[in-house]
Length: 480
Image (cartoon, one colour):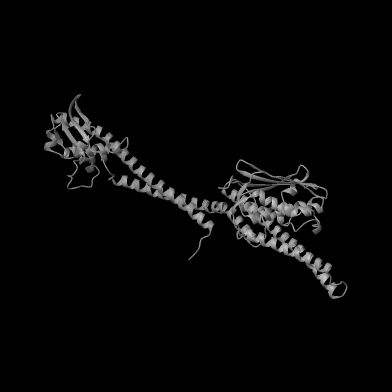
């Protein structure tokens, strides 16, 4: 089975629409032509009836009554023939035509196909009292009677039943010729429509072809492909959406490559240290002591923390990270996390300023995940705040929401860098010095935890010159 492409389908659709329009135009024009021509024929016959009424008036005066019709009905046929001949003959008719018309016509039975016999069957003649004199048609179908006068006096009435269809050969021939002409015009219109439809279909499908070609390049991994936007219609919107999709895929591909490179770097460094120290012990260059084992344990701990963070992010991305939510006092969770980090802040000479409300602040949350959230934020400030600095931690409730703020001191980050703080593996310093912090996954995990609790997290400029992390969670008020 042959499959049509989009261009051919659009072409056939346009051609079919034009064909339907042309067909309806042909039928309407044919109907209008038939009605108009029949109306013209009836009007022409009415004009003949006026002349026939005048001839009947003269015949009435010559015979002193309507007895001539009863004695010789063929007289009406002769008068009809003379009337038709006069309406169709030239201004100076030949004498031969006149002599032919003066001869009494044959009876209807002898010549039923003569032109005026059809007219005769629809004529009705009434006397002055409207009694039938000639004709057997339905007098009720006649709307207007022509008066028959003799010497200015009305002596009768002449009526003509309107024709409901064309019957004359010359009339049928004319209508047939018009139908052929209309059919020829319709055929020419269809040919013109077909000639215009194919280029028009190609023009309409051209943007779709460009999108199809660009989609093929996109599926093969060419994310830098773009489609020109030439209009503001549906194709223009589709092209803009395609460009946005290609840009997003391009950014995701770059992020994926950067992610692989960063993970490789983060894994390679501790592994290189572990390998170097183990080789040194094996070669006898370094003694197997508690100090060397502790150094190896530190690197193993860093690897374990990195792998665990990656695992949690992977679970969060696929929605498989388990949350066991229950009513919890956020003040107690935050206080416990601060207490676990007090000694580390003291070692780095960082001042902790904590302001918590006296009343419990209940939230519906996973206690362990919130403890992980606050632990990551504390470690982030501990790693990136200069010695001798400060960290302010506040907990407030307002309008059904709980707000937790971490404001540390210098060094600060720019506004552009603050937008990337929650991107996984992103750290402000370009050298990615491992001594200054972790692998750049802590804040990414924080964002996942906050979003899982239907909250929001953002990075602002701290009044102390560092970074201000604000967390907003829905509050539950007092525990029931």
